[in-house]
Length: 253
Length: 70
Image 1 (cartoon, chains in turn orange, green):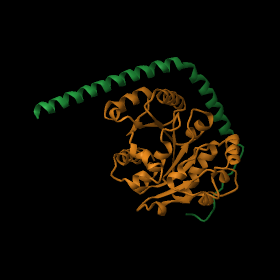
Image 2 (cartoon, chains in turn blue, purple; image 1 turned 120 degrees about the vertical axis):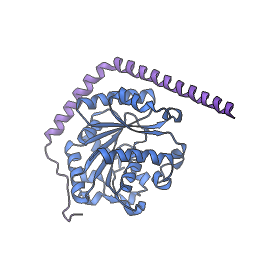
Image 3 (cartoon, rainbow over the protein chains, first blue to last red; image 1 turned 135 degrees about the vertical axis):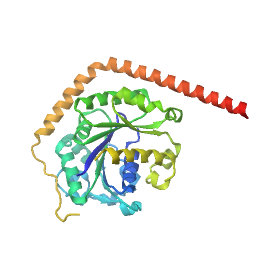
Image 4 (cartoon, rainbow over the protein chains, first blue to last red; image 1 turned 90 degrees about the horizontal axis):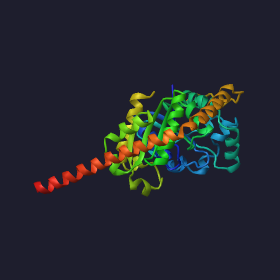
């Protein structure tokens, strides 16, 4: 049965889409079948990283949500395009048309959507993991996405505003008994060297930290042109993502 | 892949309404304790500073040791 993982953050710019794309590919390199769903409706970015053109997205997630298309019509298999030797990567992109975004935001996602899409991706494609790249913030829609998934993975940067917001988010999720994990991203290199950082953040948030990813200027220079770990398999970033993927494989699903 | 196509059936979803209500209630009640949250985060930042200071200090000592050892 497929496991739904919601990747979210309190603030924007924490690297959710970059992490989603790279983590999904890493899981695929371990032989897993992974579907990635772009739910960052107001600023979708996964398709850019995966280099999916608008012509490949004639039918989108929005059509599926409103019953105008079947799941099979909107799923894009990127396995060959990415040149993956094993595993599979599927992509479900949201519409970039303003009226479609507005309609979806107004009518909202349902708990049923997350349950159904995860179940159907498991049935139709034998998917192991469904990763939802959500909209940032501590609002009703994002929390609905997180609470309707099996597991929550919060991305956090080490600045005060983000730490405070993530702390509050963790408190809210605890009230719902949600299984949650934290990945620290874009950590200043001197801070990333401190081994205590993991336990200190875990202690503060009451949530296990499953990854510490330092800030690498190479990621910025890459400018979302393709999946970084495929182009730089020996880079330190790739090794950090590998660590998170291994945790997921060994502990989730 | 199976040949049967999968559609999302939108039915009256009372679970979603209930979940949305719970989320709203939880968000309202959680915001009450913001002062306490600020205090905890500030004390966390202080600990972090101490750790970084210790790390810097350790690195400096190592550098000096390396210099002494040639």
